[in-house]
Length: 309
Image (cartoon, rainbow, N blue to C red; front, side, top):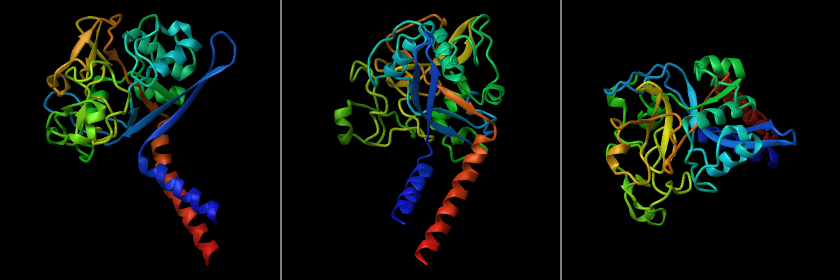
């Protein structure tokens, strides 16, 4: 009975976190062994929400997005497994990777999806992008750079409005309408709820998710969508330029707001520019997860009642 209760408790905790932990394993390009990447995602529901007054944020399907920015460790591991991804980035360990071009981020996502940097959501010859829902159905689980609206919704949408609308968006990606406090990690306990790494308060990226001592996540549970490093998205502007959002450790608060967006050529690299991965699993996965959680909890409860009767 003790083991059953422990399993029941773990299941409840897993169901309550609203997070997904993907373990992604592919053979190394050299043929010597394989490489495993662990990535945390949060589900973004409320499919069919409307955009806010910027025109962004409407997404007609459920998807997932990285709870954190891609880290330097994750980038280095994939680079070692498949050197064709790109060049070594900036920073180290659990800091977000940076110095990553849009093309390199796309190859990284292809590797996550298929184990081949040239096969996946992105055609690396034409740079055509597969529709994300189609990609999920095609590959089982597809990984990609988020569209601008996917990124925007995860950052600013309040998550409690099924129909969406401008009133259902926050002004900042820390779950509020007041700019987060620029503070060091060490000082978070002494600041009001909502803090982030920007305005040169630290001078470099902090470990992803470090700003969690006070409520500093978006409504969907993402961290660091404001500050730390700029993040690529799939927006295509000015010919071949790609979108960037979220600001970085060196910018002021205005770049954390919804109206702020930048773009750069797909080969552009900078010490404060990284990315976050989004994902669409098979269409039935969201439904099965909900049904499975309810079913397993019910099964565990019935077994517990029988063993204690």
